[in-house]
Image (cartoon, rainbow, N blue to C red; front, side, top):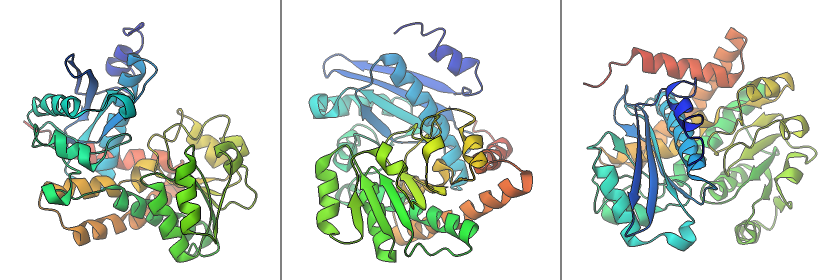
Length: 362
């Protein structure tokens, strides 16, 4: 790890992006596991957040991602009204090459060693079947299959929440929540994105998609020969003429100094975490008249689903909670207008207030 004292440790202990309660570095040589578990806050309850399995360029990059994602989960869980703090785990490596049962079991033992301070679930690179394996070593595991007492694929309600956020943005901007005949660009049509396309087409929206995986694009086009088109890449998508809404649904950092100036969409509302590449991007969006629906607010449907699993999963109850993302998003837009700040800042204020007023666990 290079210059960790000037990088990760500075972020952890001394920067505005820090404030984390605990960071655990995990290694199991026998299975090849290298993982980072970051707990940002337990003020509202046990930290809850998924496990990302990704081939990071460096260990430092992995730790930094875990810190950022864990902090985002604190805000997401607070805005979703859950009695959970924020945490996240990352496993370093290409899941297509190194993911094994032994590795997942070793990871489960590390999560279990935290005694319930961190509850894990699926994220990029991990799936329901993986959580079933992890759960064999750790009872603080959600996102399991229905056969194993879980809620199944959380991307179903993640996409539903994003869809509700889009409807709220349409209501705020155009005075009508309907997305019929709106042109929506979806970048990333994997676990969440392909469900989102289904919601959009069911309402009559025109959809433009892109993904780095040709098979993912082909699956959507085959299912929707009309009303859906594809472009080569995200650079092309964000410049598409007549785009009403842009939905980043892949990895973070989609909104940056290069992309914001060329966005044609009037609304950004997507499932990806940490869409704002750095502080100040939210102001750049506002200055261009682009309405931004904060990512951790609209993509909270999945965490609502997995949190419910801890209390005996009921899909209808979860969907009703996820439907409230529409009202929450509208309230954020109203707060932003009232305070004269971007929606991302308004959401942060509301989440921080809830965490500050919570009684810390003893």
